[in-house]
Structure formats: C-alpha cells, structure tokens
Length: 159
Image 1: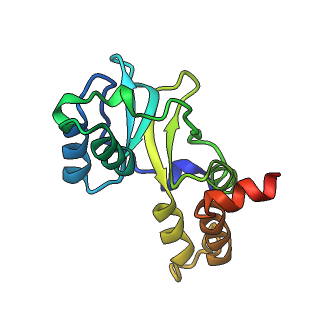
Image 2 (image 1 turned 90 degrees about the vertical axis):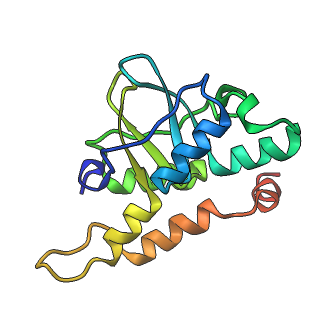
C-alpha cells in the first residue's frame, strides 16, 4: 500500500513567522499535535512544529506565546515521505527519525498531506471488507517501540 492511500490530505499548517500562539490555536482547532511549517504560495515545507515544542518554548523562554515566532523553535530538519512511497518505507523513516508524523511532499517539497502513526495503526487494525491490512499490528508495535525509545538508551547503545 502507498502513503497516498492513508495520508490526510486536508492539512493545517503554519508559517515560520506565525506566533506560537497562532500555531497552538491551529493544533487545538484541528485536533492535531504537529504542524508542517510552510513558505510561499507553493506551500513548500521548511520545518515542523509540535505541541511539545510549543510547551517547552513557553516554559523555558519565559515569554508569552504570542511573542515567540514559530521559526525560533521549529525543527528545521524535516523527515518526509512522498505519496507513492510504500507504507513500510514511511514506517521505517518514522522509526529511524523517532517521529510520529511525516509531511507528505512532492519532488519540490510542496505539502500534499500528512501521514501519522495513528493512520498506520488504524490501517493495521482493519478487519473485514474482503481485503488484508497493508501492515500488521506487530509492525506498528515495532515502529512505536523505536519511536519511544528513551534518548538516554539511544545514546548508550551508540557509544
């Protein structure tokens, strides 16, 4: 199965010069925990911001969220996938990057959608309908285990 079949196509996003307050509102209204950060009319992905990024910035910067720009806390190294990618490849990217969501982009980096671990888990849980799921619950469990590995354990195993 390809990413395109599971990805969410109607994706909320923010810009690098939006405030953390505006990004948090987007997440609240869209019931999501991460937003791709896009630039220009072509909506080229330049970063990702999570609800955790916003919370940590609010706590450590000691500045109101409406006075902090997204670009100051967003992740600039973006792991993404393409609509034609195989689901297993997207899962492998999530596991190796330790992320729960991937922006889905075209060859020029334009945002086309988002693929989340929840999308994959729902697919793994599908039964019936005369078709087999594209991924197994065991595969999802392996991906989750890789993503949630504590950072300290990761560093210890790399030493």
